[in-house]
Amino acid sequence: MGPDRSERQQVEPNMIDLHSHILPGIDDGSKSIEMSLKMARIAVADGIKILACTPHVRPPTYNNTSANITDAIHSLQQRLVTEGIDLKLVLGGDIHINQDIIEKLQNKTIPSLNGSRYFLFEPSHNVMPPHLIEFSIKILKAGYIPVLTHPERFSWIENHYDVITELDDIGVAIQITAGAITGDFGKTAKYWSDRLLAEDRTDIIASDAHDTKHRIPVLSKARDYIAHFCDEETARRLTFGNPRRILENGILRRKERKTSPKSVHKTGFKKILDRFRVWH
Ligand SMILES: [Fe+2]
Image (cartoon, rainbow, N blue to C red):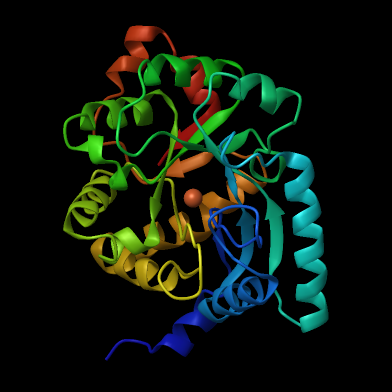
């Protein structure tokens, strides 16, 4: 019999979740401070030590900016301390694709992850944005690294998987949703998350938590699955090693490279890529 849950958490109590909608009342995530506190307790019980608060940044529906997100984080962090909940919150945003992303990152109107060069980058789920690769190259050349959120859940991945792999090849980081890995988003999302894991095209997993019932801040189940489906080292890297490197503005790691990044050679982009990523 394998180790039970409490034993496992003693081994790995330091997971980092870089995608959550835990801040109350500023997007479609937490509805109240009480719900946010419950979400925080769920995260801590799961072994999450650091949680990025990443509300939607999608004007005009969600007009969140670095300023109001920072204020909301300070308020929630203070409550966590008062309540004795041991969870460190860090700044972020779920940045929906918009042509002015680079300018707004540069003038810090919209937040990267913990002030690093990495930021959550969310395209439309239903329609592949035009010129996505060219736009991503432009962002990378400006010195920022998009972390593509949950490609396994895009309806367009089926017909454009080559675009996802090319984004990966040019140096865009890939985030998979923990719930997709464990089947909570259905068979199709599970198929694509398994494939991205199997092909070693994943940099981090994250909860993308929105509430306390259906989309909760839990990584451990997916972590255990990855330890079995891939290996223990990969499970640790995707839930702790790489998230920490992002927060520290470091360089992401992969276990191995299974396909040659031909687009990189084609575009002469390898030097920039090499600066950002080390292959292991
Ligand atoms: Fe999200």
